[in-house]
Length: 489
Ligand code: AMP
Ligand code: MG
Image (cartoon, rainbow, N blue to C red; front, side):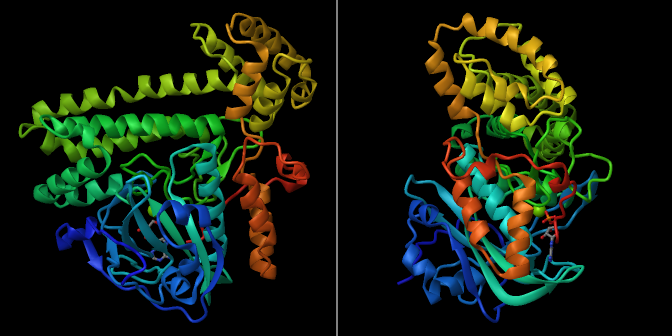
């Protein structure tokens, strides 16, 4: 009997949706970390997963019975330019399992060897990017942001050639699905209406069952727009910068996916960019909402023939659905920042109050995460000295703080309750880029994973002050700042 009860719905779609391919075995697999709580949630046996047989699966050396073992086909706009064929060039879908809550999840090996979609790539992943994805995706999950998860990371015992030779690794990624905007684009670019329809039906049944019935394709488009409006607002409220918001990196299910040169902002600035390949700041922090809408427009284009056989009728229908993005995003964003400021009621002027703090943070080069955390700690108590000191010129903060205090007094909730609510939404720990880079360096250079493990453990409880872990709160000192991140593909 297979140790995993696979139920592979994507592999039951027609063969042109994917290529059947086996992972390429590696010489010396070694488990770095298994996400035990996630394994349990997925109904998988952590002991089996860490056994030689389990590690063989997690490294691509042995497939359990019932695995799908496919690389999916997709296309995508990368930095604005369209590639009609990308596909899983280094990822192999093991298959789908149903978790304890009845949710269907993909299990995918990233870095499992070449596939028919590899083009010039080697199909492999270097250790650094695998650890980065593990750390940041798990941190996002702990922050409550929809995301793919990391089930395991293994070393392959082989090296991969990038600029230098680096240790190779495989990440086991868990996602609601790996269907992207680019998956729809792949079939749209081929004029394959039948496949588009099958894909849309698959997505409705799997992710948006409430859309089923009359008018379901429009309902699907609206649901994807709504999911992304909510997701991007959540990115903005935690200071997350994805870095490569290509349409092939945008999940139809509304999860954060494909962690490459992503990073969290330290000091607040709307034009912040980390990715070394994003020369023009296309995917800068403040550009994420308009880019998401741009990507959704590409999705809507693929849906036109399903919305109406007559293109002239389909276009305004799609346009109306897309027009919902901005107001929905704004609503989520303002609600998110209200919660961060401890405001349970709504006043029209709150938008100005929020903007005022962000402007002060920008002028004062203040740390985005710590400002909200220190504000929370001080709420309804003493004067927020620790917050004030985060600003280059604390006077800019004082003016704003007076307005916030005044506004807070109109809240019906007692001060202590407001404080508790703020502490539950404003994290103390985020995956700070300099810390992520440091633990990766120690792992890559010294084969020492203890700092990686410690960082992952701290980030699992981002809202809880952990004694002895004060170092993890700290923004980078000037000499520690990491200004560029690399996807390392
Ligand atoms: P990404 O930048 O990871 O979103 O990848 C963009 C495209 O390049 C996808 O089709 C990937 O499968 C492919 N790709 C990235 N790295 C590799 C690699 N090392 N080998 C083969 N294909 C890759
Ligand atoms: Mg990608």
